[in-house]
Length: 457
Image (tube, rainbow, N blue to C red; front, side, top):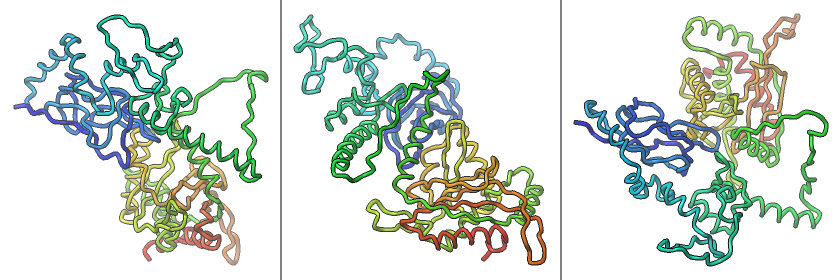
């Protein structure tokens, strides 16, 4: 006997109302366990929501541009007896009229109406109070107030959900002035909030500038580059847009200082190669040793495993060790988090690092995969460089940058001998960490990497 079960949105971290940008199945489709049902677009990445079990899709409960949260029903899937699998396919080919009539009753979210009612709401005339007026369609009527193409033409109407429109009305925001950052220019609640914040900031800056204080920056130069030669315009990816705003905020608001150090990893590299030869099925990189060394340093200097609270007056010390790893992807930099690194060995960390890096490059990171970090590592060792200044990933208070190792002559007391030296760049928040403590932290890292036996202490 076949059972019909609900496929719901799993734990996606502290995120709600995440937009659906693609529906991957339709009624009658046969799906396997872990096959993608829908694609969500979070603040920093896109991810597929997999089917929790195999079966035949009987009904899809969401559509593109709906928003979902943990526990939202995505689809009804029939499991069990496969003999009846062909029956729903016939029902999927029913005339469209009955489906259209029942669609509003099966809306995926109480905030999102069906396509039919959404189109009707968009076409409805908007009164001066901003509330749609109900029309009597029994006969032709003249509009109660004048209107023109700019108020009713589809390409002139801001692209936003009814919930966002209601939110904008509450704040007195004209959506025509808001730039949509979501797919196809859709305006989100965050876009409205950003617009209000920008308007308030501009007002505050004008007051501050008039009083002689503040940065009082010049406007960004507007240049027609095509006057000087051939050009090509390429839009930034969504990840770069969002991360760019975060990085700009972090750089301006956090007083960065960077401490540079060299670690002798000659013995560590020899051990790494030996370990790799013994475990050929696992890719073991220097990064896993860095993770273990960072955990040891965080235990030794707990102020680095902390965050300032929102008031800036309290320091929140963390008792867990979740390390963020910057991963370079075609769409930009993302920072997935490996959790409980203090409880995992080198081989376990190597396996998890490989899995989460692949997940990042395949655009399958969930918001939960990128939250909860205590300290971040940004490694450019595979590319090059001798040092750099990594930007702190707020609300963390420090980040470790790693450059390319090189063989250098090192004085051993009697003569020079070749040693493999690894450049380390530790950026820290000077509001929380003093320069002396940063120097001690970096020196401790170098000692641990130079003698892995110290990890046992």
